[in-house]
Image 1 (tube, rainbow, N blue to C red):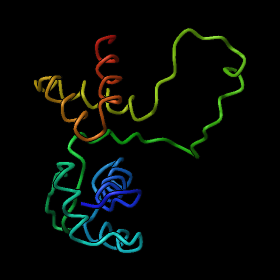
Image 2: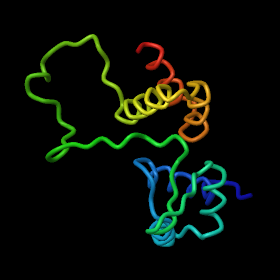
Image 3: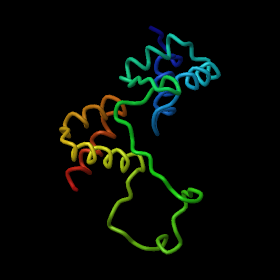
Length: 144
């Protein structure tokens, strides 16, 4: 175990969370990107095991994904972080959610409609994304 600011395992976990945030990615692409980030193969695989990465094989190759995979949202046209003009000046009591939370809530609700228990899904989110995000998703599901 390394002490101090340089912790390759944590860096590898962050790398995987960022790369797998929006869905499955080919293992070959992950290995190449990790090499560019100077993350060695064994550290990458250990980080994947700690995060509970789901490994699947397809005709196209092997894929990795986070266990609580966010739903991909299809949008037309370019995505902008700016607020629309008609909403900018408006006062609103509703708080705007982080897009990750919205997607995780949608995914949990979709899986609940298939009969999965919300507690198990929230546990997976807590394990993969952290307690703060899991608590926010849990609160949103309780509101809906």
